Length: 141
View 1 (tube, helix red, strand yellow):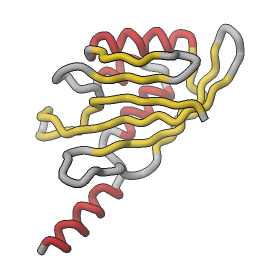
View 2 (cartoon, rainbow, N blue to C red):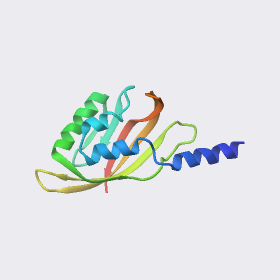
View 3 (spheres, one colour):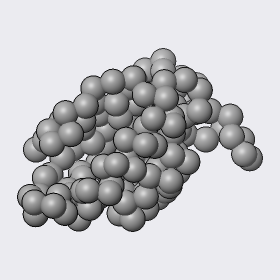
View 4 (tube, helix red, strand yellow):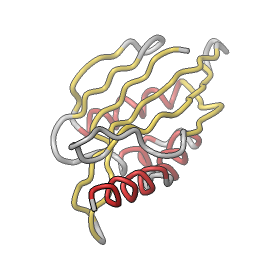
């Protein structure tokens, strides 16, 4: 029975995460409002962004919205695509969604490619449990 459960869990985790489409839409449309809808409402969110942002802090969902609103006002996404499935941790709910995010500074014209990781965890939501972002980390490629 355990083998069947592990196989089924592996199959479920290989499917695209339900948060992937709204997340892709948020970045491709440079929409902090759309991103805010995928953030947890249950506490602070650790956010660590490499250069050119150089940010590492615990943010409330409202602060995260303001940070990404500022980012999206100056940096325009040129590419965003998520790797299918979640990297899961045994015994922990949720998993990590990995994506490639490229953007251009509208003021300087410089472009930046990054790997961005979203730690997603299930939370109660409309119509049942939904995956919400509880941590964001990005590093330059």
